[in-house]
Every structure is written in structure tokens, then in C-alpha cells.
Length: 176
Image 1 (cartoon, rainbow, N blue to C red):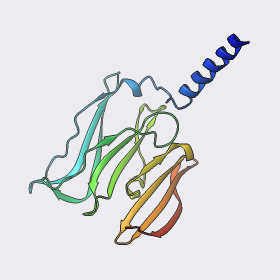
Image 2 (image 1 turned 90 degrees about the vertical axis):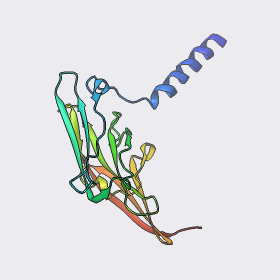
Image 3 (image 1 turned 45 degrees about the horizontal axis):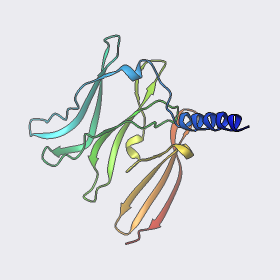
Image 4 (image 1 turned 135 degrees about the horizontal axis):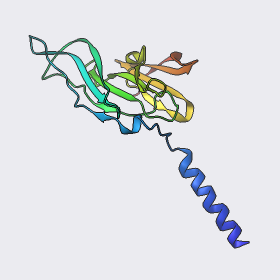
């Protein structure tokens, strides 16, 4: 009886540890990454963020994100890259920071999902509309928290038939 309980316990532990595991995609897991670049224009301001990757077959791709407006190079706060699972399919995607949208630290990102069919990243329309995106995989949603003085705009985004859409919105008074 103890042996049977021990085997059941081990199987339970294995299922719990693999439940949160991400899927693997043979191509996605073997990409070679280029350095992120934020080249400046003739005035020295940053207008775009470039990021590249090469697949195992040697095919190279560039991701180019236009900033909403030029930013002085010494003021540019973007360029961070995160790899959450944005579309909740179990395969890591990309979020590239485009920097702060105001002086209080609200950030926007360009979002790209990995497409296993085409074996490349696809731009997510409207992802940059999500201020301070918080990925909530347990609820299959992305939350946005955008503060304006003493008001916080909270938006909920979810996937509807393969398209990211705003599915909720509310305003709350900020707590000091």
C-alpha cells in the first residue's frame, strides 16, 4: 500500500511540474538572435527599434518597430525584450519595449507571436495600445494599467478567434 501511494505521489508531482511547462517548437527553440539596435536619425534621435533573428535554415528576419515619435538618444528608455507566451499557446512570444509613454514610467511594447506554420514571428495589431501589459496566463488575458493623475484606466485584452481584442475597460481612483 505504501509503495502504491509513493508511486501515485511521484506521478502527481510529475504532472504538476509539467502542467506549467511550455510547448517546444523545434525552430523557435533554436533561433539565433541579433543584437537589438535603436539607430538614430540625422538629428541623433531614435525613431525605430530593430531586432533580428536567424532560423536554423539560415533565413534571417528583421523586426522593425516604429516609435510613436522621435526620442533623444539619451532619453530613450526602450529596448528591453521579454519572452512571455502572449497568445497562450504554450510557445514563447516576444515583447519589445518601445519606451516610456510619459514621465511616470508607463511603458508600451510591440508584441509578436510565434507562428509555427510560417516559422516566424508575426506582429500583433494593437499590442502597443496596451499600456504596461501584464500577461495573465491563468486567466488567458492581458491586462493594461494606465495612470493619469489620480485615475487608473484598466483594460482587459483577450484572444477572440486568433485576434487580440479589448474585452473590458474600467476606471478606478488611484490610491496614494
